[in-house]
Length: 349
Image 1: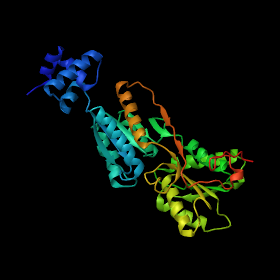
Image 2: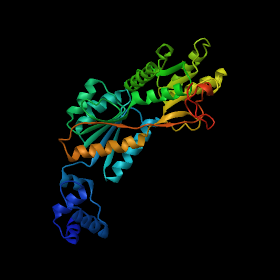
Image 3: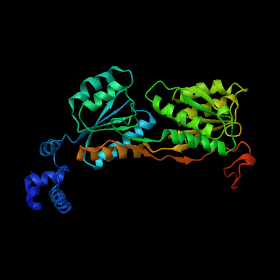
Image 4: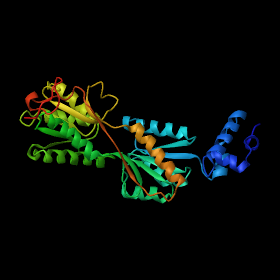
């Protein structure tokens, strides 16, 4: 059976150098690394995880903690994380830490404390301060996808900005009576939800529309958006002409509610979301597109950078969101719109 000694002989290096080259740690010149990799490929040698661990002192395993694995955002982030880890030859251990569950307590009290990983990626946990302290005390590099940037490196979108941009899009279309649907989360999304609500209020105030601001409280789920929108849209005296939803699932709930109430989208009601959820195209939803898969990939890049340089300072990486215009928004009155309608630019007068 071919082993690391044969790889080293073919590459003309020592066994320790061959181990470092294949393990991806320690200094090895690019030329030497290529020779070692080529030699390993020639004889079909694949280093075992245990062998690499002995040579590098690492487990070659990354722990990933998230509250849900079956919701769109988390599944997309996980895809990005997994692909980036596979490209680096690293294993993944997934911890499904549902809020309020016994499993979550066991994960924080037992499994994570065993340190069977080199680093940790926390996705959308927004844990309480006690849990943040527990994660930090583990003593392993930690990167969060959405979360607190005080003690950990964070990858996120600028939630305040995307909500402002969504609101500005509706204002440019001539809308004044614009409501925000969301801002009532009591789950792990509470901080994100609140930042987006603040962004909406900021945009309305900047446009001189603070008196028109209307907050419709909703949980951050499709059923939550539906239930709150049914109640709000059923009140014809306060019915807005446009809605900024805290996320696409809430926006889709609002569209379904409008249809059942006979409110036409977008002629009677414009709706914009944030995410570009997998169902956004189906509902022709105008939205601000974030890329969860790319956030997962960037989280891995940052984590491996922390592994290579333990002294690296924590940072917050904010990724851009792109406006995607579909058919759920339109000008309240083409003469008042600052956005192109039917191929023409309107000056907003």
